[in-house]
Image 1 (cartoon, rainbow, N blue to C red):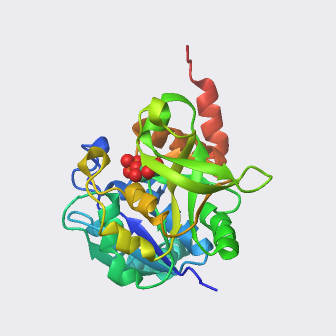
Image 2: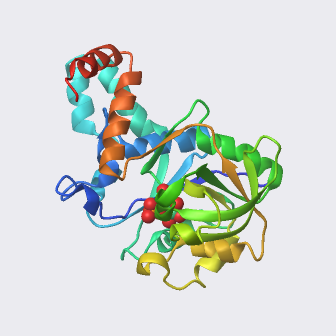
Length: 291
Ligand code: G1P
């Protein structure tokens, strides 16, 4: 049985939607409350059993590498000041994972980013997590998907129902129900960012994938697609000609933190869930005179 140990994080995007905040700082490092966005994804990958993390980065992304590395100065200062709790938090991050980094030299699209990780992934199935999609779930979404992978032994993608014109911001699948609980679908086709009238369903692809290594071969065959970029969706569509694929309607709430409003909503919801901040935050929100 194939096991999934590696998780790829495409993190080379320029983050133009968050300028000027992202001028000198990677968007993946923007904090949701007090944790950088990408750390939520890394923790999810670990919880799903992926202990080898591969980050596809680019210029201006060294803060990500520093974040997952030891910080001798900071650790020494915290130690000297006896701030044991903070020291633990800081050490946990660097002790958490084994990370390999590879650079995507040109921003040619998500498909190209995944292909850049080919040598580090090798010939085994692997996960891809788009860190912008932060999913709050009782059981981490990638872990939910691992169960499907273990049973089906083929690629599995995460999906969510999106109604109306908003569907055009996603990859959309054409699929048939494959379980009685409405969560599992077999995928037959897919299209990246279709107009509403061309969307084959209301099932949008969300940024969690478990893929077989065959995807690397098809990634070398695709042409630029939606937005002039090499799209992962186009490669997966080709992969369907060779292998079965399933889509899983996960349990959990997804926040699109790549979008300003989505980022703000996630910040508020995550703060409300915190033991230390939930009460005062709730009180503050109640006191706002909204009309
Ligand atoms: C990417 C994928 C798209 C998917 C989306 C989920 O698009 O290309 O298929 O639906 O992530 O977040 P992006 O949001 O990077 O444009």
